Amino acid sequence: MRFGMDRSTLHHSKPRVPRDRSRLLLEVVRVLHEGVVDASSLPQRLADTLCREGGFAGVALLLLEPSGKALVGVGHSGISARYPAGRVPRGRGVSWEAVARRQPVYVANLVEDPRVYVPGGDLRDALAGLFLPLLGRLGPVGVLVVHAPGGEGIQPEERSFLEQVTSPVALAVENALLYERLGRAVALRDELLEVTRALAGAELDVGALCQRMVHEAVRLVPGAERASLSVREGEEFVFVAAVGYDLAGLRCVRFTEQDRLWWYGLDEASLLAGRPRLLSGEEARRRAAATRPVHGAEAMDRHGDMETLQVTLGVPIVLDGSLEAFLNLDSHSDPDAFGEESVEVATMFGHQVAAILKGARLRALLAHQATTDSLTGVYNRRYMEQRLREELARAGRGGSPVSFALLDVVGLKGVNDTLGHAAGDLVLQEVARQLREAVRASDVVCRYGGDEFAVLFPDTGPTEAARALRRALGTLARREGVWGEGIPVNAGVAAFPQDGRSAEALASVADRRMYRARQVGVDVCEEGA
Image (cartoon, rainbow, N blue to C red):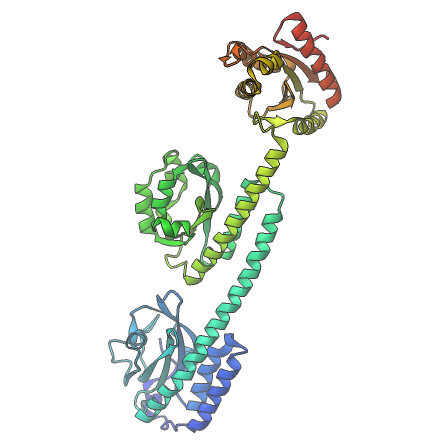
């Protein structure tokens, strides 16, 4: 690729007349001063000013990526604008030599020097180049490249002057980068706070909340294309949310806490501090092969898409000193997707996720306590009455059956009087456990009052409901414990719509049949009375 100037033009053009250095310096200072207010335009305006007022063939400004992996052209003027520097990988070309040595490097003929690296093509025009490292307070921030016709070059006194100019330029560029970074950080903080408020106040269950958080993570963390969140359930971690992966296929996968630590790859102290870590695709595949889940290994192989993973950013979610969740942010297209800013954003987001999860769990605990009997662990009467009305309304619209049963624990008062209330509590807990085991997950078991329980059977007729109850009551009748041998229980079953269409009507019929069962000496009564 050519710059649009051939060798004859360069060799036979009039000698470049250096501009007045005082004016050049004044213009540079003016641009740097204005750059405090408008940092985004500073690199280009600086290149234009140096090129125009200094009378150079071209000027380019390259800045160091936060990751330190490349120099990126951000300002080009004159001949440099026709052939922009683009992205120069670390260690390639004279620009990186100037950064490494922290000293200017002058090349009299760029075409003939083997050190020259030109992104995207070959340099064919006879040009001289002065590569000036921009050294800020915290280290190198970039390189200023000044071009002149090769036959004329850049004279020693001009090089010396340009070296003096680079010091204020470097400080101004460093300040501009810091201001820009600060602006992004403030904007990100405000957005994270807004996301946190929205999610913390959302009326969502924990699963839906986790899915929303993962979507926000992909949106906010630079470079993230996909994500998954695994959450502690007892001693294991399970996938509860994902973007870009088949969550249904991953739900059966379970990892231990030790597995999560091995996958994390850093030490336990870093894990419990919530420090994010980066793994290349190759390292991630190696760790995944060595860390097989305790359940669902085949599902992980099928739905984890490890073979195309380029890089993963892992964020431990720590609550009260314990690892409670793990967020994986992934790129399947770019091994350099996550830079310093990505890690910073992920760190802040991880802290927000921890706070949101803690709040959600607290709300879930309070809701559970408000609807659950503390002694037996089944639902309380308030919750049952609410669910019964909801199921009857649904059945009324769709015509499906509903059955409702009331149960009485016979002789509980005698156990309390002779053996103490602790023994009576064990009786109630055993009744609750057997009822839960005998019914479906969609059925609702509750402690209705003192020695009474209730069971709601959605989409179920009275015969099927009575059959499930007889299984539980038969087991209880044979159960031995501190209370002696057997726990006698009687039950009455009422059904919608034949026994009534309201919650009150069904409860009244079920109550009469419960006492009828005791009178006639049967476990369950589902008709008559």
